[in-house]
View 1 (cartoon, rainbow, N blue to C red):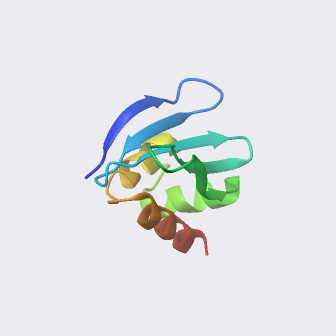
View 2 (view 1 turned 90 degrees about the horizontal axis):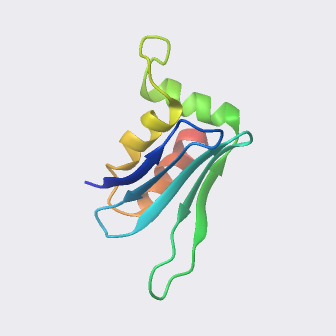
Amino acid sequence: MGIIVTYDDKFATPYCEIKLASGEHVLLTLEKRGLTIKLLAHPGVAERPVFACGVDEVAEICDGLLDMSAKKTTPLRVIASVATRFPDAASLAAAFRKAVG
């Protein structure tokens, strides 16, 4: 299981860095245009986006994971809690693509 390295949802651009079980680090960023998940650079690998979607898809993902009206939580908290369960960036990206596809 992954661990949350940094987390901030108090400002205009909420973000979270997660260290996945594979040792890869991913950065989840929520912006006005939606969600971006980047694989962060590490030796031999450049930083690159592995998943992106718009705000409507973010809402669908969160609604599918949790009844947002029943809980006082943020979209980043919901997405981050799920993202920590993936072993690597490839499986994380594939699952999110499937969720919006």
